[in-house]
Image 1 (tube, rainbow, N blue to C red):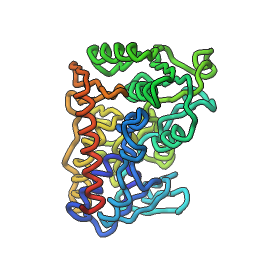
Image 2: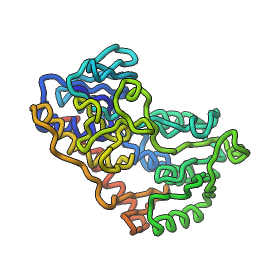
Image 3: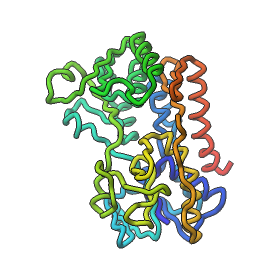
Amino acid sequence: MLLIGGGHAHVAVLADWIRRGLPCSQATLLTPSPTLRYSGMVPGWIAGRYGRDEGTVDLAGLAKRAGAELVLDHCIAIDPEARSVLTQSCGLVGFDVASIDTGGVGQAARILGDDPRLIDVRPIDAFVEKLDADPPAARIAVVGGGAGGVEIAFAMKNRAGGGTEVTLVAGKEGLLPDFSKAVRRKVRKELRRQGIAVIEQDAHFDGGDMLDPFDLVIAALGSGAPGWPRAGGLACDEAGFIAVDPFQRSTSHPHTYAIGDVASRQDHPVGHSGVHAVMAGPIHARNLRDVMAGDGPTRIYYPRPASLYLLSTGNGSAIASYGPFAAQGRWVARLKHWIDNRWVSQYATLASGA
């Protein structure tokens, strides 16, 4: 079996292999980095509440304890008919069954245009490295009105003393369009309280002077689809994400599975969110185990009617969202800290063998 990518769901697969043994004679993890950076803790790092590497999972340690070979490289092409992938440095890697959890790709330059001031939050490791290396900027625009953009805007406002001028460019869809009115009210009130301006218009570097005053432009525009799955012949949706059935199985090549941001469920809408990848991971692990035993997958992940989102406001507080309900306070931030650290620490324990 070949795991392509070290995303949130594949972390759960590796954990299953550690706890229950490999489901096959040989397994490989192909991923460009020996660690997974948990994106939910990055705003906390920006705001100075975590160290840079506190929110990372040791993929290399998990693979070693699971008995899987680790190949540190990028997947750049796939041939599902020949059952092989091409890597950037190591050449061809074959497989009998493959599972893809590489996440999406950045799309900032495509949407906004290219500019030296632009930083995309995807891939998250490159974003952290760039932000850590660059000197502080006096005027910052965060482009993207979803949960990621909101948290990054709050975090940048509270970075290194909070003297930075931050503007959130939410776009024509507005602020948090997929969240309840109660959540949007609380977020707007907190943005005003912290002096973060909101512009509800689309931005482009060649589309006027909206982005001209800023020293740094951070794009939090969600996932784009990598090009190699479609180029290799895997069925994809209109946006280029791998089309999968209820069992995360490719609709064109049933020996290939995809999950997380790189996948598009054709039977039921599942948003590109880390919440879903985390929840679907253990189910995916059990299905892959059944497949390797010669049985078909039987378990299906369905999102709950409402998901809990905890939006950090960068100042020791947070806003909770659950369906139509909203709450705010330091207790929400403590809950977020507990949930995030519990998820990371469980895999740290497994990787270390403690």
